[in-house]
Image 1 (spheres, rainbow, N blue to C red):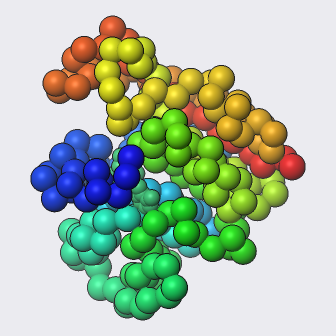
Image 2: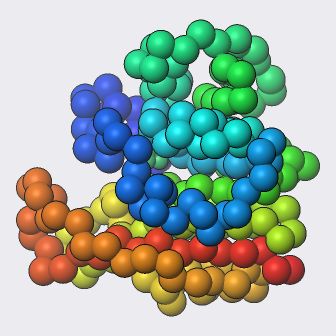
Image 3: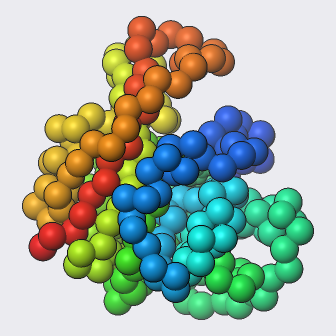
Length: 215
Ligand SMILES: C[S@@+](CC[C@H](N)C(=O)[O-])C[C@H]1O[C@@H](n2cnc3c(N)ncnc32)[C@H](O)[C@@H]1O
């Protein structure tokens, strides 16, 4: 989706993706990272998710990237956190201890910077097909060799609902990532199909994959 779609979604309160609690899929599957304190994690298209706070609490250096600057500011105000603010070429950066949130376009993320882990929840599924390969290329170049990405996606019959969130199946994940990553399914959950959007679906799965960068 274009930037203006997300800016209107935030401005008009169409933020059903935002949860007031830590994500259960993350809590269930975080051990797949086997992390050491001080390692780094990138959270693309992070919104103001509380998961940033939880990941920071695990001793990781967290870097979230979000287009909508007000969401970044709200992350800090909602959680009563102070921040330092600075500006670089593409991003306005907000920092609190080991949490850095960059307000700006994820596709402009520095080519030189790499991370130990990536947490993708409601990021790949937020993008239309035409943007997914470019997105996956940023993910690929941003992960260290041996690094892991936790990928949480929805799978449903796309003909029954227009995204976002879009349906992403294993074939598509393979086509985007298998040239550089091993791909393993960790969990399949069946979320409630509540709300006007999901109610049209005959099935809805939430799949959690771990992708490991092997090349
Ligand atoms: C479906 S929401 C998910 C937010 C978050 N991952 C969560 O779990 O709550 C997608 C987010 O991506 C942001 N976004 C969309 N395009 C972006 C881009 N090019 N760069 C950075 N953020 C973007 C939107 O503003 C929105 O907050």
